[in-house]
Amino acid sequence: MHVRIEDRNPDGRGRGRAAKRVVLVSQAHPGEEVTVRTDLVTRGTVQGRVAKLLERDPARIEHECQHEFHCTGCPLLAASEEDEAAFKTARLAHALESLRGYTLPAPEPLLRPGPLFGYRHLAKQSFGEREGHAVLGSYVAGTHRVTDNAGCPVLAPPLRDLMDLVARLADESGLPLDAPNGRSGLRHAVARLSRSSGRMLLLIGTTEDPPLGASALAGLLRRECPDLVGVHVLVQSGRGNALLAGDVRWSDGASFVEDAILGFTHRIGPRSFFQIHPAAAEVMFATAVAAAGEGERCLEVFAGVGALTLPLASCFREVVAIESSTEASVSLREAAARVSRTSGRVQVREGRAEVLVPEALRVSTPDVVVLDPPRAGASPAVMEPIAASGARRCILISCDPDALARDLAPLLRSDWVVERIVPVDQFPRTAHLETIAVASRR
Image (tube, rainbow, N blue to C red; front, side):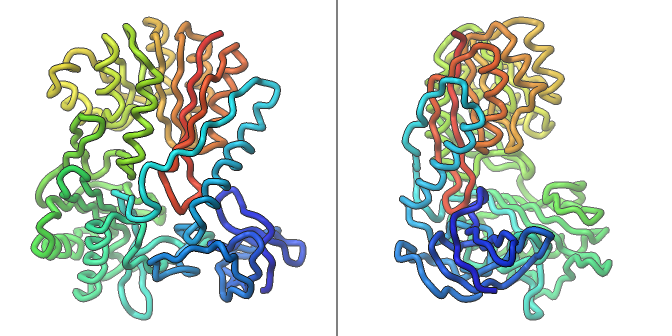
């Protein structure tokens, strides 16, 4: 299929048209002419990758990725820094258009606190087979086919080396891979690198029960990689692609690594949520804490292991932190107890935000509410009680512009004012964008 790319889809893929269908092509740039290798055809859409670049965007940059036009994990892989910033700024502006009728400040210039490559301290990859060899990689957009991610340049170098080692040892050992035909075996690998210590944790997902192949692989890895301090094996069932689902059935070594952000050290378990780009997260959290200011009481929602909680506890007499994950809640309680200047100031409440936020607001009114929800957003069940509360300020950190607009709407309908909108590029080479919105009561 031959197509001219007209613009970009919100997910960063190039977008054109052919035979009345929208054509989405990963890593293709507006203005380019390409032939397309088709991956998925639906009623109104063709999804694919570049088979041949016929007319090239002169602003394309050089990079180290060996898998251009094969892996679809980085739709902006060859975009210039300026091109990526313009796309993300426009995407944020488009999402905020849904709030027209309300007065909003212009978003501040995009912050990019780090390089375009080598920034990721968390790797999530799936096992697949290519030319008879085991590989680790990501799913091709629109499919369940795994493409090879060997040497992935967006991973921090130690993490890149570890994932390449996992794939090599799995292949050399001839370990079985999970397959749709019912064969049990290796399915996923998730690894975390500590920026502070250089130590790493690895989680291996398998459908083999007992997990003999995965535990054998773990033993080989621990011997060859001294910085890999802990390996944990998940036994997974069903055909879903949830990388962290399942029961830990085998462990070797440490159950956590420690990492520091804004001067506080956190223990991160194999399934704990922690920011993938520490340099960008530090800038983002520092901006949020400064905007929160000081006071008596702060309500923090979606607290995780406490990357924001502990800095906030230095500014408020009391922080009520809500978190749904048991592993993260335990880490947060332990972290708060270890730090003298926050000990006793943090109350951790474990459970769903939709239930606990209204309860907390009925008990007492916080000065400030700080939220860092998942990509889907905080939901009206969380935002509407906050909007109706007597809190004087709300700091909302969003990792999706459309979710940001949805979450701000209840505040604006309740006569709140948005004072600042600060975009932070925490996911270079992808369409994802973090944004900090600061709102206060009129």
